[in-house]
Length: 306
Length: 294
Ligand SMILES: Nc1ncnc2c1ncn2[C@@H]1O[C@H](COP(=O)(O)OP(=O)(O)OP(=O)(O)O)[C@@H](O)[C@H]1O
Ligand SMILES: [Mg+2]
Image (tube, rainbow over the protein chains, first blue to last red):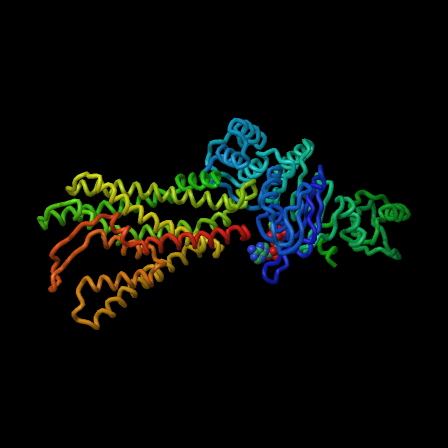
């Protein structure tokens, strides 16, 4: 097991940021850590890295216990950190350094020899499209450039585990697609990736496992498809159909509301696309378009806490 | 340890902090030497190294020490919280670096930066004394250096006190405000009240001589202002030269003892500076080791 968190509790005064969190990340996974704002994602990540002190629980990294009941074992923590790359949420890097100097500094913290550091920095800056600005001060960087440098610094030690806190927040769609490509590539190289987000679209297509955290507790941990299916089962399907001619839905059990002359919204507890198809055909009409409305992540969260 | 040190040192040299320290020192010294020179010219007195040293001491323990003390406290008070606010500390501490090594390295870097500033100040002081007509002797160099090192010790104590503030107050701006308030109340108002108390307590006896008043002031400062390193430096440097006066209060005779002598003769005051520095560091470091870095 790369990361195992057991019954983690972190309170801030009366606020329970983590309320008995359990979580496991396995070797080779791309794990999406989903949750609405304030759910405790950053709190979890900061605890994993020993940056904040939870009151109770246990944390294991690479099968080494690093935290138990309010105390970190700092020597073990330092050892496992050699194998971890971390990208924080809204952080700035040292504004007075250039990307080259930044990566050099970080590489030095890992004890990477000078020549190797330079080699690796060049590789990463090229990978993340920062090579042209390698000698420009970070203070003058745009948001996207900062984000990419934050990712670069997390990769300098060629980590086995990458922990990214909201890495795609603030990126435009093409940036997100590019980012996902990089993550996928890193995963193919054998890195385990654990990243948080509050946006469903961020975890789609790339995560094999998604954990949903709400109010400091993990409420589901599964692959995204199962999570969605489970949600649809509970929340009901919303299907929008457009027909070739008006159709009368009198007498059906489904909740139907017209959206136009030949357009209807149908809400049902299960997947009834075939039934709709047959029903429309029975009225000698054709279905021109049929779409299943995706639930938003917020809807999923709300349903799941209920 | 060395990683934290190098990072902090670079940061100090490349950001404004360091140059502000140097700038303020230059700003404080150059005019005061100019004034000294015109003073000596007008009074027509002979310019000796000793006389120049006395003036330098009053200038350093006066204005200079005050500004430099504020600066040292501010460096400490924003050392940790500002890095938490920016997020750089989370990046640094997510690397395989122990917290104690990081803060230890940071402290060493602060000492080095202040030491460079102090050496710069020593050089300016010596140049200044030569400019107003003193002569370059090894005694002069030693004394100016020792004087500046005393000031360095005082600054280090204030940096250490600043660390405690920095771990207590999450917002760097608030910490800055608090540090200024502490500076004015604890290091300005209280010392002047103690000074006043000393004078009041000697007033009862109209026959008290100037030496006795000074003695009481020294005792009170040692006893009640042990936490104020600047006051302790003042007590020590007061012994650099001894004045003897007649009953009417006219200064008859000034004997120059040197800074080394003054330090040797006031071990309690030096000890106050040192043990409090150690205490502040222990508290500050301990808090840093156990604090949430967000
Ligand atoms: N320093 C703090 N003091 C008090 N409460 C805090 C502190 N930091 C976090 N919290 C609280 O802890 C809870 C969890 O916060 P956390 O930052 O982990 O959420 P998150 O899931 O990362 O949210 P976001 O998507 O906004 O980043 C929130 O209710 C937050 O208000
Ligand atoms: Mg967060």
